[in-house]
Image 1 (cartoon, helix red, strand yellow):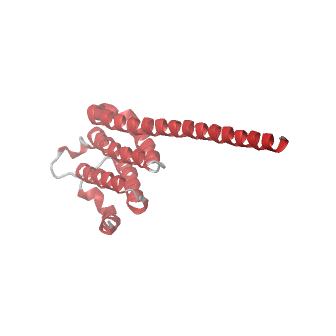
Image 2 (cartoon, helix red, strand yellow):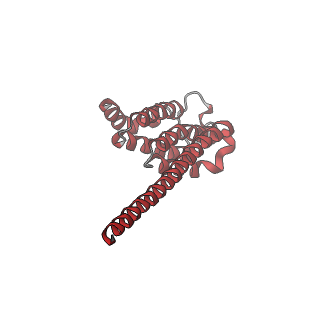
Image 3 (cartoon, helix red, strand yellow):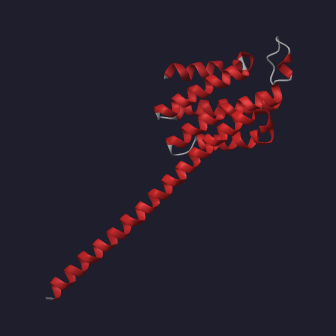
Length: 172
């Protein structure tokens, strides 16, 4: 009788341990999902704020571009996608804030140093994604981001990236 009792207790203990582990894993997955949704939605909200406020976004562009760079290399593809959706409006806001006065003459395609810094960071982030990201949707958002940034900063600024960009884009 003792052997049957010990076997039953062992089974019960194993089952309860497994159930406890399953419950813990479910909680972890729910937390990760919540965190992922939170970061994704935060990036998309940042894009909306940058798009709407443009010139009034000046004191936030540096921080926004830095945060979006870190989100662009996140583990979850949805977070990376949202980061690339948000990068372009931040660069666009930077162009509107600092470079629009310089570009008042039709012949000038110059960018303010601050805008160049933001565009450099955004393009660098895009180049990393084109090189390393294996999620097709993220790469698609990256290409859209590059297209938008290209329209905002112009070909004169983009010349320094042309070789690397075309090389990476041809690989797709």
